[in-house]
Image (cartoon, rainbow, N blue to C red; front, side, top):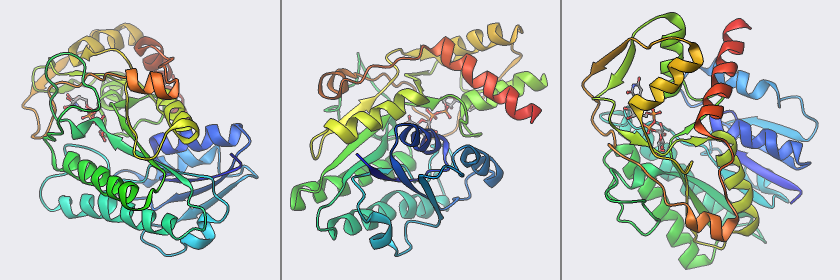
Length: 316
Ligand code: UGA
């Protein structure tokens, strides 16, 4: 691959992916609309390390803008990460924004790709939120989709839109269902970012519910690797779980964090927000077999790296 387009390049996962592609010698066009879901300064910091790379061109714009012909010229792979993320804020009036950014904008991107003489491969970011709360053993990609949040509904609908473009036009789209990604530059609304910040300030750590909910946390460079592998090897219409290969309860993560910070967290339990899944646990065998995906970074190591990054950001 010589040229890629990354939507959402200033975001958490998008900035890591952009950096990786540039390191691999790929020319990257990055698009980011700086959707107002958190501090723009944090997104600008995400871009800081890559912004001056000679093989990187950046466009600060929403996907709804109409310059696709310029952007998609000679692009081999589109990595579509732009979205309005976050489960807990997707209720109420916000829902229309979620629909706009996660469904409508994706459809515009697909239409633009379809107009190309040779459409690029499109790797689309989806979410474990499409499953809702998981039951039984590991969840594979054929499990029923029963989202428990409006956000999960928009991600499911986005997948359906992608699937009809595959079926009708053979558009080479693949979808990745990420399981709660963490690591340096994690979004400030997400659990690990909030917990580390609260512990470093000596504030109580606020846990929603009883802390018994579990997640299959995925380190950010593993999610990036899944994108690279999908761009190379996936067939049109394929969907893959991208998990960390270890389910752990939230309360047990806090013990690891406490050890890293050499402190005992002062935990405050409060009622959980609507839409929170009680359990996620990914069966990643399909991604292993089809893509050669294998998570590389343990939770302990990933947390250490996220903490180091947060300490660095606080100092600078
Ligand atoms: C995350 C992302 O925010 C979604 O965008 C993504 O699609 C989803 O992962 C996914 O993988 O599908 P979530 O699992 O809620 O959603 O991730 P966190 O925000 O890191 O929360 C993890 C758990 O910690 C949740 O049970 C949440 O309720 C809890 N939490 C979060 C707290 O107890 N306290 C907090 O301050 C924040």
